[in-house]
Image (cartoon, rainbow, N blue to C red; front, side, top):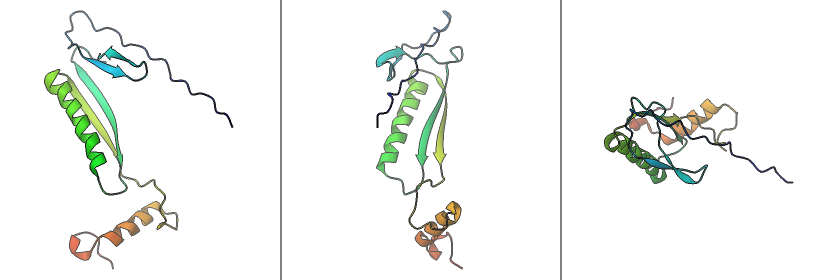
Length: 132
């Protein structure tokens, strides 16, 4: 079965900042155009950069792969803020709903299934859930 080739939307360079606005000479890699392009924030006057990053979907213990993402993101955020003097508004989403199928969940109730999994992991002395 043949599938249609997916086309990326065309990308348009943001408008150049006003002449009286001093922005640092920062270029970033644009994976859509496969070239370096000048970094121009939407709000040039206040040098405000708004940044939304998808975080993890928490369904198991944290591991080193999670840390790599957070450390890399934090380093970039600090460089933008401390070296290039941008006002960075950063939001990281954390999804805490288990959307993975579980063999231990048989009744289809996701909340009840998640509680059942955590009850098995916690002991009465851990300060968490105590079995009735």
